[in-house]
Image (cartoon, rainbow, N blue to C red; front, side):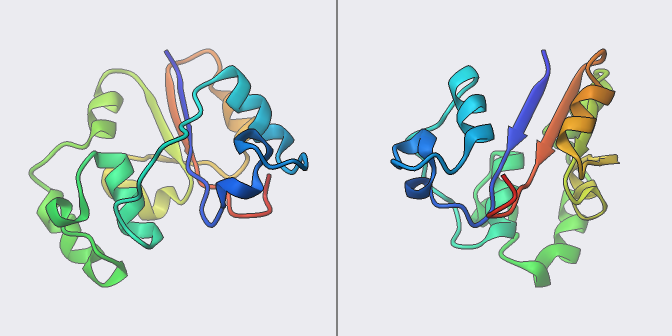
Length: 140
């Protein structure tokens, strides 16, 4: 099974057609939502990006993982050294682990940068992959 996780940053659901907005503002996301899983009731663990993404990618709350923003990022790497993230485990089991800003999130087990989502899917279609993409508002 392949996994494509898209975590939009600075999007508002009330401006996306797949969430009921009357204008067709997000045709690519609408297609993905109709063919995949669309979460309609979610609660963020944080009010800003970095701790929220760390929570999504680890399953832990900011209180547990200790990352509350960029100043704690270097400390966080030391805290995580003895632990395996889900991505380390997937990688050990033959998955290609790739994501947006891999240079930054490599501490979680990402080894390959993804800037062009369509190219990444095409490049890895014949292997097991976990692709994570972080589009910013206006990029879809």
